[in-house]
Amino acid sequence: MGIPVLVSRLDKLEEQVFHHVFELSPRQAVMLGLHDYDGLLPDVSADRLKAWADKAVGLLQRVKDEFHELDKEGRQDAQSMETMLERTLFEIQDLRAYSTRPTIYALQLSATPYV
Image (cartoon, rainbow, N blue to C red; front, side, top):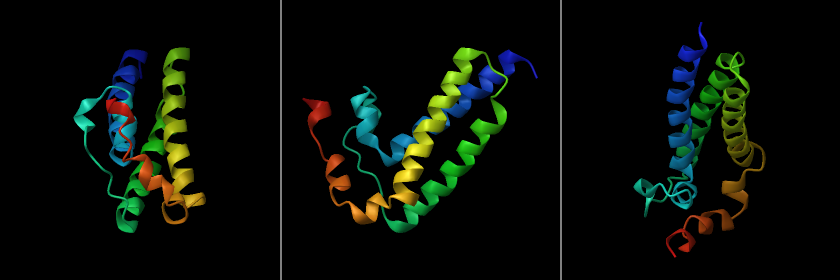
């Protein structure tokens, strides 16, 4: 498979990964200037977190499986996506942050991105 095809596939996957991450952390999107996420709060119910994690595992596997042949910049993009997904999966699955850290909910309510 040629590099241009891989880059196109990476771009599409990148969009899916960012949308998925921002679904759970809309504040992060707003801090980056993506105001489509203004005023949104994530659904952090146990069922929704499990569904989010399941999808994230699939996205992570796709990134790891499909993009090892890219140039340095493409590999860095893929590695950034891996890190974003792994960090959030770690918070959900290992730290159980949404059931042990009540302050995690308050972070989404911050007005900082709007000031």
